[in-house]
Length: 193
Image (cartoon, rainbow, N blue to C red; front, top):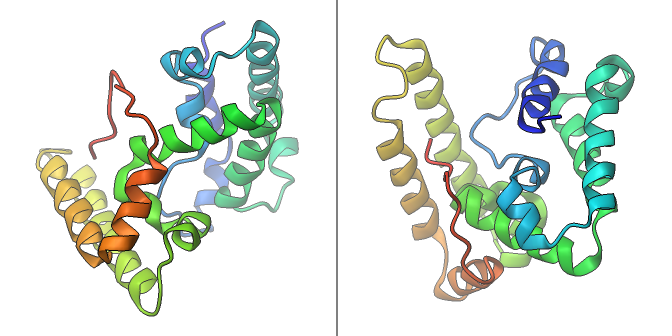
């Protein structure tokens, strides 16, 4: 069984919710998207049993998406619920390392996450400024996806959004954010748009 196609199926499983919800495309993805990377699983030293448990969670969610989404659940709530199920399979050191890898993979947009924002110590209008930057990027992303040239130029726009986000941080906050990344990990494919 291939795992990545199940991620695609899972994404389509809650597509019906998207019609009635404003889904944040420029925010950080769920941790499970990073966890399903085979290289990440190797880095976390997942056991065979843990891998089977993760596959079962995906299978259950994709075989009966309506039940998995509880009917009225919004996409973000659904992804949070799925993340909780995935994280329950991991031990504490694995969860800690997965969070570090997630921060590395997602980059500065992870500062939109409430838990990350609190750990970094965002204050006053910093969260709203970050939301504004990523809201503008999301708009550019959507326009880019609708244009004939597709995602051309989005890599530069994401880089600019990353830089603008980091520029909002104080030196202490930036150091905390950098520390949250943990030991550097080389992703074969990095989130660039």
